Image (tube, rainbow, N blue to C red; front, side, top):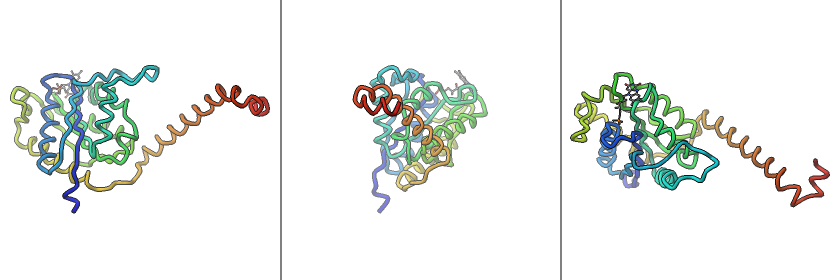
Length: 224
Ligand SMILES: Cc1cc2nc3c(=O)[nH]c(=O)nc-3n(C[C@H](O)[C@H](O)[C@H](O)COP(=O)(O)O)c2cc1C
């Protein structure tokens, strides 16, 4: 019965380049999603204007578009080029517009694509962000090193057959995990939840101090 549940995966490629190896690899994972009967919503960040978050400004339209796609998805794939042993600034900027609404109890697959041979630290950094948002991060992830040898950006295909199959496998597993229910909080998310509650309490106090004297002058005089 579970096999019939439709699954949509939001596939985010964290490179801004028009000929991006990360996009090639994330699209290959998307092929695996389709093999398993799922649908893909491919989102290369080059097509989104998501500047560094500034809470003083209105949320940009593209950030709304991005978060809307993620919220509606059943699972998310985060792909990044490895930059200085971590994930890209473009992906960080996009993720800062997201929160529990987008990621809580959502299955997430991770992909890192590196020019060199050590892509794994970027996967760890993305994993921590996702766990903090109470996402269910798949233990099996994909790291493609030595991009010039393994990814053909001209043809738009993973050149190495083994990495191509691993990408497909990740996509298929993503669909399988998205069909399950993971209603369990992570420790990191519970700490983060506390942080949000602290923010809410501080905001409430601020609001009370600003608006309270106007609405309830008598109470405020008594209460200080
Ligand atoms: C600013 C910058 C930092 C990089 N840092 C690393 C790194 O720490 N390790 C590595 O293996 N490759 C590094 N690279 C190479 C990229 O990981 C590689 O070019 C990647 O495949 C680019 O993906 P894209 O084609 O999707 O943009 C870096 C590239 C840039 C532009």
